[in-house]
Image (cartoon, helix red, strand yellow):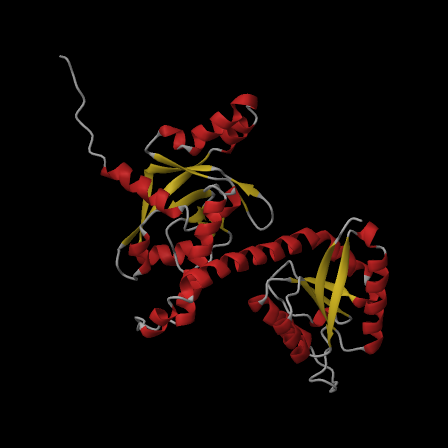
Length: 357
């Protein structure tokens, strides 16, 4: 018998009649699992505190939240406490979120377009349709979490636990938290282990952070200035310390999407043509940047960063002007090669031209 995935959802709802609707709808859905291709396992909470307690005990793939929740268990009053729960989830838990309410106008602007706001009057079918359309993403995220835990277990038993006394006895410079240090150490090990397991091969989507994560200008930031794409090439060590440099350097990015499309369509020669572009067309004056998709699934690039087309901006002006123009940033794995090639281009000496006359 074919096995089907089970989605685990949190339902924050304080009306008994609505909870019964959920129970009946889930039972009907699960009876038809062969057609639906997934089953649903739900936990119910009537208050924000109840929901937070469940989040602490279980890992959920998605949450469906009513805005009207009990103030505390057994205490009812008109409120929009569901907004508090959604905001908590958005900063602490990677999961899908639906606001399922009869008061849609009272939902906050969560600034996350993926959070769906649904009208209770249109029934639960829309929620199940949403779960179905996002099922693969939720299951991939769960599998990624399991992979991370597996690799974390290896580093925990092999390195962290045996050396824990060194972690706790060493004084930390500045205001660093031992928790943050430990988290970075684990993430670095897990990232390296997963990269090694894939044979040091990455997916193009790993090339960028979209949008940029840092709230300051950084090496590898891509900016759009008057329709032209530029990339910050000033070394990270200079950008990390405010006032260290007086100018910020950017290299212009030449769009090579037509060449890339032609290479992809070159049949048997496709891999060789693509590799020529990825290898910067063997020109030291430029650096290949993979194509990327933005949050609206629009494709941009690929580009060649032009080291012979450099723009310098006063540092103070650059911070103000460029920050709002950033649309992506190279991930740390790809920044070193950019800076290395940039430095190699400018450090070449060359020789005088030879004439036989």
